[in-house]
Image 1: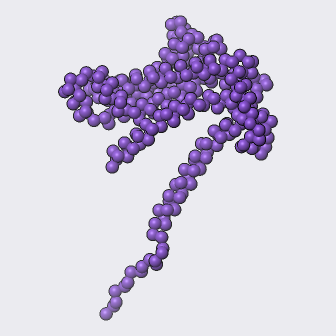
Image 2: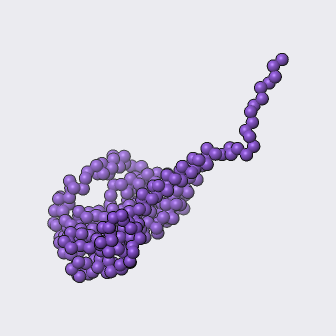
Image 3: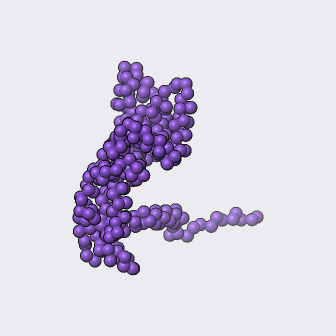
Length: 295
């Protein structure tokens, strides 16, 4: 009679979770590599802003300045001509980008709420028409928009910088997609309690849309903060130009200081970084809600 074949046993001390640990180590290594790729230009910009121009151009490049040169930031603020127009340009960018962000968040939330939660004839056609505008490059409509802006007397004004960008289709798309997942039972209960539609929007929709509002706010602010083409076209006076226009002018100077140029870039990056860090908790909260919903 044949004896039953015994199943070989794993020797004691053999790590059974070795493949899982190796996979985790690989993931962490890839994340560290991607983080290094993202952070390296920022570290270069920060280090170069504190260096002398000769040290910046020295090879091999030294990431840590041998002598900190704070004068780069003073020259960045004063400008090559000493006009101190940079603080005014920063204020212009804050006003323009902040105003466009606020209007975009409010209007896109309103439109997205209507498209997601109200049933009316032509709703899908309206949504597709809004999405179709994303296929049209701004350069193709820039001249007509410019002529309309001139006709309204908005050249060299905050209105001319803000009004053409108060709403965009991508923000409407994000808001609609997010609000489609919002429970209808909560809205119906609020209507039964006698809450008006504006009240529902103000008291229920907006407070519970933190993740998507944060996403729209950060993307819109960054886009307008970096907008160069339209401010160059619509503004003529230096007092009304924004940061990108100042950077172009500063870099175009014949005797521009590379260290001062990096200092200008550092100062220009601070508001966007501050906004992202301020709203980052909403991104984390949105990720946690998404994970909980999947479970």
